[in-house]
Amino acid sequence: MPTAEELLDARTIGALADVMAAAGAPPAASLREAGARLDGLSFSGRVAAVRQAVLADLPDD
Image 1: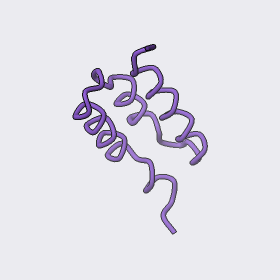
Image 2: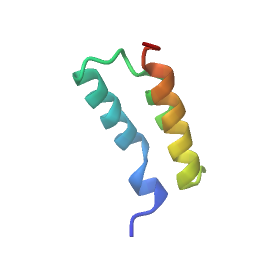
Image 3: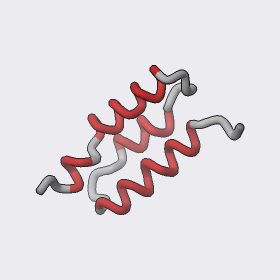
């Protein structure tokens, strides 16, 4: 079974930011920054950090 580091790492988060950009979302600066700060976080901590970053990057409307 993959570890949290293997499931949600900086490369995976970068790929998510690329997909969001391809879909027309604004640049995902918060998401890319969150990807760089995942070391040492549990899986649930990683999920929470990514969720917060995605919400910060998406427009309010």
